Length: 250
Image 1 (tube, rainbow, N blue to C red):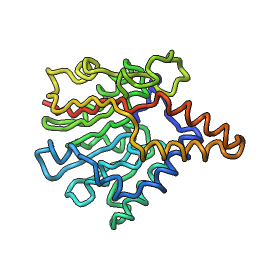
Image 2: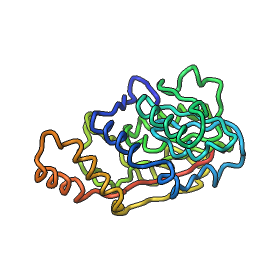
Image 3: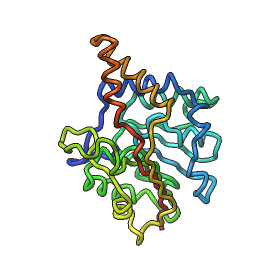
Image 4: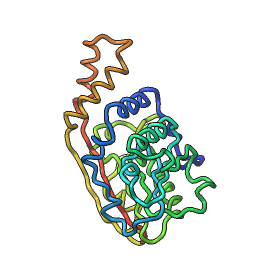
């Protein structure tokens, strides 16, 4: 993530750390990658170079590129996420050093001499105010050349918490529509290759995982009945409401 005087520090609380621990345990690489459609493979015109995932988590994008000739970079200020990613790399049959990992804020001097053929900013911009998201995009342009892909996923304005008042303490700071994406990546500088807006119910598998996570969070201090009520309330209006986009630097 990029650090400045205005951009947020997005450290996870204990509940989210548990969420991603359980995700690592419950979803092996094979299950995650089976239905994964990687836009890097669809749109990138070169077979080598550098690929960067900012706020990578347990990056499906990088896991799916392990067999490629690209140099792979993962940036995440949550060390635990990078540790899970390292384990996933080893489970895929590669040495963990196949990816270069960083917990530094981005950009850092360690990246000053790099140009990237693809930069992933998936599930990241909704943690920024929109003005900060624009600043973020401005800063990553210096790592691009003509043909660089920027791949993103953001919560859409249809997201189930988008109507709640946004405060400095809100977990999500922004929700996006197509005009927002085009404003950050104007036609004068970028070509829009793909824009997908998804509004759908959680799959049964995701619903069951969320119930499991809620149970593990609450089991020490709540009765089974209380947990069931909280699960019902949490899932009642929860849906998949996001935008996926791919742009190419001109």
